[in-house]
Image (cartoon, rainbow, N blue to C red; front, side, top):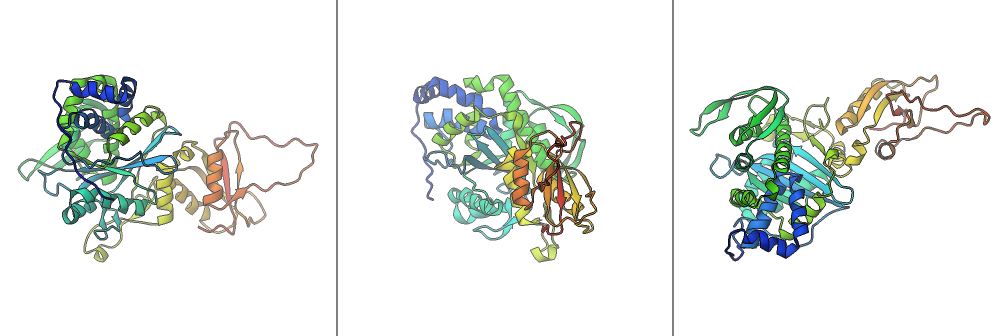
Length: 454
């Protein structure tokens, strides 16, 4: 794929960009794009570029335009976001934040997954941590191929296609929050970081307390980047929460209908964004985002805590990786399935099936092992134990327990765990079948047999 960076011819006139934009695509569509922008802070970036840069001809010199229809696979468009410290910071091209956003217009779903920067993957610039791929590719191949190389590397690792990417300088968040007049958000735990970098290659102490807090741009940026006294995973979750807070404030404040603010946002983004999303893609994404149900948004963080959802990674011995701390998947099949469930089939998890896993095989610990596996994938396993039967179970099966319908979960279990519905047993036809207990908290029993193979 060949990209070219172009500067579009300048056009003069105060707010001419807005009237030209409406004339070009229609006032109704223009406003629908503005309503759709809260999809994420980066969509805000895109619309500001769309309305100012592409139509006045004074757009970001570093943007990589792609003049094609919106790429998608099975209805999903997957966009990679990379957050970097910026050109004025040490290691400014290293990706401190890595997120994948998946949008499905037909289903009206949107999902967000954060990946840890220490995840070690293969790429065209060698096997390395994912936070280094763009910087290495940019150094050896130039700006234009950097995004393309990191897109392919993460497509290969995740098992899903990455259609587009956007790289943002973290300073964007500070300026956007200030332009919106600050944001309000819930902080789930105290942060006391005495090692937050200052402007003189030293440190300053950053403190924020648990509870509802109001952030200006500087504090929001520190909240997004602080990591010395917390994990990369909690930082990734904070970054997701920050995006949602920006989205909410942009919607509530009316910024998306204010030409002055949009023009200011464009100026903010023009020197701080690299993307292969072009004008046609931004318009199409705006139309799709307008129909998304944000109440069903699914978000997750891939991590190395085996007791938590997404805890599918581990840290190997450092001597095998030149002394580096890196993360690898415990099981690539489960890791890719977790990514698929989060981004491509979130409707399975949104059924919120309550599951019990029972051991009918008499193999010690089997139910606990499978329960942990399913929890990592994001399923609600509430109970484990032994199956109440004097007979040994050979073929694993599942049975409906409550009156709640969870057909997508049933289909997933059949395929992924290779289990079947509960065997049908002939009974006295004059006796009515037993009905599910409406007060039961369990929706599905999974009974593991001798032949179960993880």
